[in-house]
Length: 243
Image (cartoon, rainbow, N blue to C red; front, side):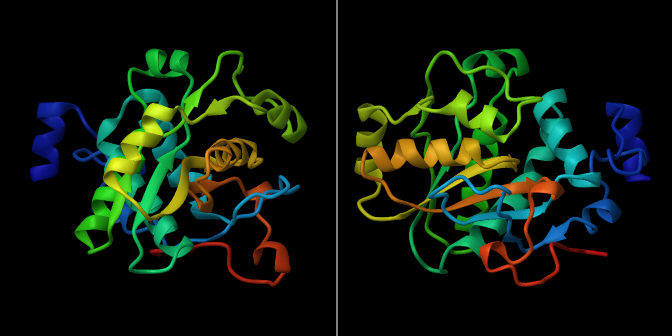
């Protein structure tokens, strides 16, 4: 009854099953992935820190990402941040201070969408980690330089060329972090890992100012890019869902 009433008042329905009420109903939420696994792109950008993803970029996870990013279904930010937080937890040792650094969106994209989805997810993921007792901070450290085009439809080499030198860590943002944290592990955060070019460029820009990157964490990774077991080639399940 409560879900039906919410649908009448707000016109909402589950993005997974279209049940009236919440944007993500409890039944569909229970099918989301638990934990995370290494999600190495193929080919791997040289020097890329170990990338972790909570799920495959398909099915319900893909619907959530697109709904939040492109259709301003802001109520989906919480479950997506939970997936990102799970990837961060899998990527780094427990009990160490963390700084989650979202990859920067192009200013034109932020204006068109009316929000910065990756920055929101990193902020909410850090808050969730803090509620669990982890010292975690989300910090905007990177900005995009002009000249980057939309990545859609570009291959791995084209993405790498498009993004080369495209990010920077301004001194003012670095000083702001220094006032908040003296020591912490840095994790680059994104919503979807495809070729790894974006994460590698973010890593390069941070390491250029003396901030080593411990890992990359993403909500999802595309299946064609996932190599089970990472570079070791060991066979293992890609993702475990709540089913």
